[in-house]
Length: 231
Image (cartoon, rainbow, N blue to C red; front, side, top):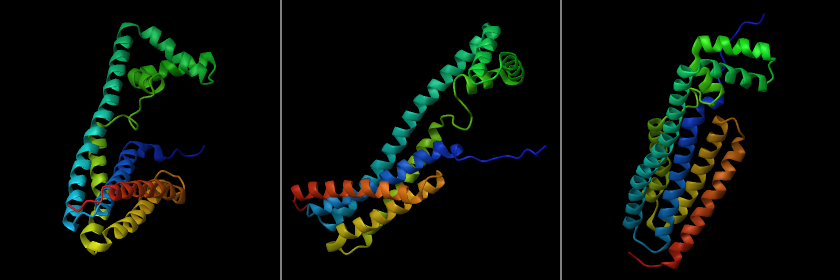
């Protein structure tokens, strides 16, 4: 018999990875598009930099609030379903055992074996068995609002730093072009890293975020040109 060994899977990263990738890419694209648009309008270097800082603060707060509210709604639903299962297990354990048995039969077990598995899992931890197999709620993928909010805010801030640095360090006349180049590089790196962490192609991960980031900056620059007013 082969010896059992613990395995790690990328699905365990799903919760924080989604929030982190979304936050980082949003930070890069939002702030770079903002400063490129403002720069294209003919604004002063100070105004471009100030708009970037304001966008960073507002965006990080918005990402944190949005993620928290969204994931908290999921957590509330999970808690409600678990509370319902707890009541049903207390009020009618036999029906719940039959329900669990039926789930295992649908998954391919023979009825007698499905019943035995259901009995043993119920004796071990009835609520956890129903949460996992009936509701699809596991500890690994369970909603964590605070973690999602903090991950999104931190990632947005990290993503916003390259375009902010580009604005701060670039010659005033070249702010837009330096920001664009910096942003495309940052997007390619973040997309590739996200792809690698998630087990996908690094090249594909980088290419898709570069495409959408470039599109956002082009749109922002066009808007800036339409409102070509020095501030």
